[in-house]
Image (tube, rainbow, N blue to C red; front, side, top):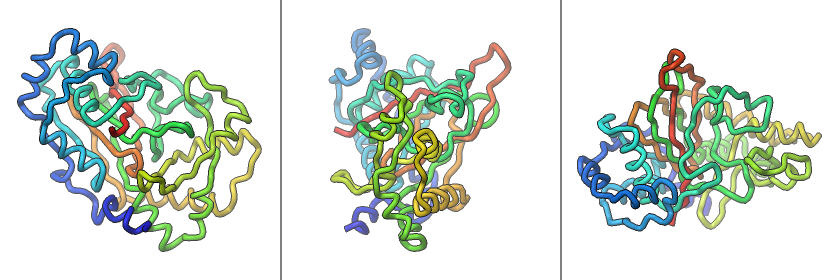
Length: 305
């Protein structure tokens, strides 16, 4: 049963660019141009109420590529649009995939805010640090199916996107370190970082869920090493040898060049990835000179309908 669930999502080889890269269709200028002002307002402010969802064959193809291997798509616009137009196009594509989550805002601008996630419980997206390989959302009760990122400004240096496949990791551990999997499929505490929630020992102890699981939706991987280790530190708990070995082998596998893709998003690029089995990372970055546009991505969390 496990093999059948993994068979459609594992990478036989690292995906080639022609397997996941799409050029934005020319008709999008007309599609967005034909929207009325109230439609555009709804699309940005209340996207789940946006109902103009005519069928678009190429968007349906993206949906299929997200649910199975390669598990992600890169849409390139050629930077022909204004930032406002790109936001509308991106919102339209995201809404076409499903319902958007408003936990951080339907469309959250990922910009360095001069913060340090190692000194306070905040999302790494508010910093310019490398994120480490992770899936989005550390909250037990919520998991986005898809993470979307629109690049409005790539910044000066760094900020590369890195993608790897947790289904391949699972097969690797099963073949070589199977004794770690029981610990990784048991509830594991995570730090609490969602805005508006209480960050206490009790809250952390309740925020426990597995790294690997096989729910009705199929294979699911939920991971960020830093928030696991900080949870154990804050609660005074000890990480078992089996779990620590699994975590170490996870990072070792993900950091091996043969197991990940690396590329830099350009202005107008839209990256959409399946958050249940595609694990992502970002290299540290530096912005341009003071006064210029900082590295700006627009993030969305989407759940399939």
